[in-house]
Length: 83
Figure (spheres, one colour):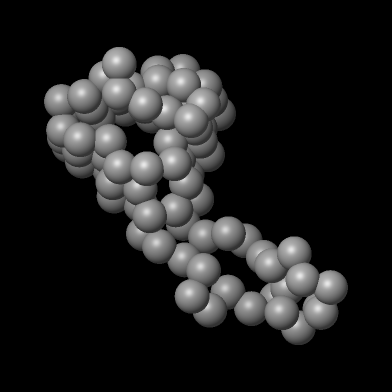
């Protein structure tokens, strides 16, 4: 289940370079997001690139998930951490 207003991203979107060509290249800046079975992601969470969320995990409302969350864990906060 994924609550309202969640953002799940698999890239950095763009470079902050002053060079316009570099700002439009995505090469090497993407990593997949893996969400396990029976995961509950509460409202308005942000899940960043490369994160793996294990089966049965619960992510608290408004969390910013910057690293992996193991299976069966309850996690929340900014940055998100195991409770």
